[in-house]
Image (cartoon, rainbow, N blue to C red; front, side, top):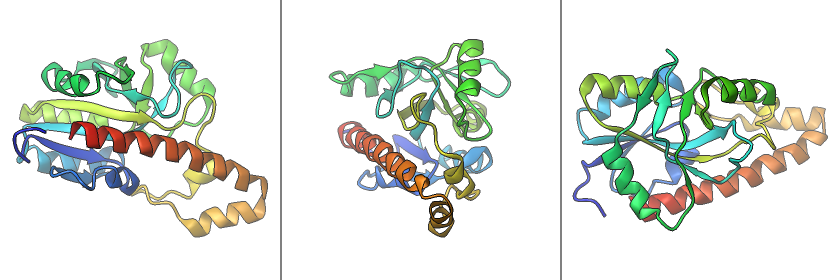
Length: 219
């Protein structure tokens, strides 16, 4: 365990990611998307020594699949520039995960969920990174301004073998909450969506299980 509860502060995108941290003594903010993440970072920067961008990410690398851990060395922001993350705090977490396989390649922040393989492959080829998220660049900007270290600790949810279905994205609001009513409508309209939804759930179970392991082991 670390010294005290002000060492780390966490920013997650959705309440499911928050649940993986519910037993931690550190402060956790739920902030889906860039705008909300920026607001959360401004609050946490006044309270903590290091911010952790925590939760799920998408893979754009065929070798990186659902359930795998990523702790990237650098972030590609929306300005397309490489931004290195705190080596000191990364090293601390990596030591605690020394018995697990961790991908340390770069991550890039995007404006929305990308669920097309061609788009993912273009990003991979252009920027040589392995994963994507929506919040980390906005968090980085605030951390850089306030001189607070940032690390990214995430687990792959969707990968090149299975993208998040469009009907799930359409059922998700601006705060990252999924409407069960909307999902049911899509399933009733097209019964094959039920089996797709089952696969989404299995991917979720694998990813959330790994997030909980990381939380328990490291924080």
